[in-house]
Image (tube, rainbow, N blue to C red; front, side, top):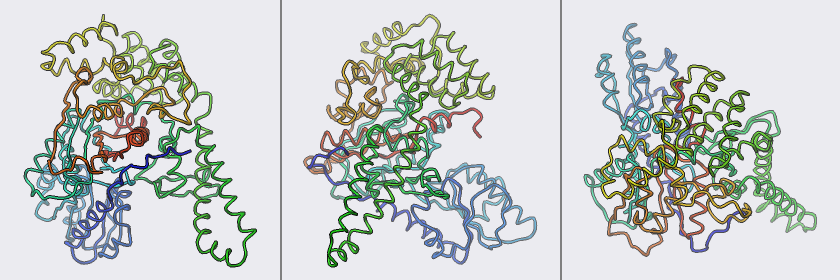
Length: 614
């Protein structure tokens, strides 16, 4: 059932060291405020912190009580308050209010702010403006990377996407560079670095700067090649419905920091249960990358095998029974528990995702990707909006229609926008402005057709001076190239033959054989060519900013490390893309490590761009 790996696949590095380093530094920072203290933690840091240092570890280092940052007067009676926060001005202003409220009633306390992953000058400026700069000690917890599994590492910075790509705020770029520097210092030197996208180029330059400023030491490389990619290079992939098991679990139950909460409908009890989803869960590990249509067959076979293992007890003598109880029974019970949970989760997914609405949704998506039956797809979308099936789904389909069709015809754009605002409210005017700014939902320039635009872009691609295109034209081309890219890279496989999802033949299986993710296709092509040579037209269509740099000569080109490839997504990555890269790794006899600013999906991506978002 699970895809078989090539026997010569190399071993992945041990990333638990990243956790130990983060834990040790946090403990050191807490000990800088000796004595009992109360710790205030920002809400989105609670789950990552729990993966690094749980409550008992914090208690061992004189943390008395834990509070969530809630932007209201504190109830703590401690004389020492420690704040573990992201570098956000709103949170710093709240801390200033807490300190000034204490000052107003003549109460003396010691305050310490620990910023993670780094502190920004703007935050210190707020402390100074509010008159408490000298009364608060500040520190940085360089918690850049959280290993979620043996091959997934996250910066846990979901705001990276909106801040960088929409607001143009590049403050997190250095954070990404620092994360890369940490990986290089522990698991490098890297032999080759490839990348595409403006943000990737800046993160690479930030990392190189840090490497040059630091000490160089010789060590055995554990990671060979690195590929950096911006999320805005490929918006189509995160806008497609996920149909691999792990992606569906994320879409429906929301995986948070590698952990998911299954409700009573899954656990078959009156309680919810938090479950860690990683390779340690043997049942999950075998189905996580599978197309959902294959999952029930595997789970039923697993249940039969488990029953057979239990039935062995009936023919055992006393000695065999003793061995069975001491060595096998515990493992079987654990496997049985996990199997029950995944069967429950699959049944819950089935109820939501096998309805006629979902099948029609997938059919519409596939039509948009292939460029067929566009008027029928628009009719489906209009009905979807008028029935108010789902605000997020409607926006997602609008964006997918726009990107695949190089923008909407002006009359379609105005009509669909008016219908959407009528159904879901005028406060989404700003949402449409945000989507337009990113090139996700735009109208075609008057008089421009798909063919005319492709012809214009093609002419420029062949022009030797095309590299000197202005940013203004680049932004126009960015909206107008999916069809051309799809043809050049064969992203949409020919649909004249049946695609066997039980035996996938390429990465398209993650979307039922309808589409190969552009991001993963670029990784495959660049690795095959050892650079961007032969992909000049593709990179022009993607607005350039590609690079390929040979790294340290200290890396042995024949070592296993050269078959360990780190792919860093700046702006988020989906579980579908991770499944596709795992498939590519099995095919090529290598292993991929995915580093991402955050795990994303269509809902999270669209949510981050909502105009009414606080």
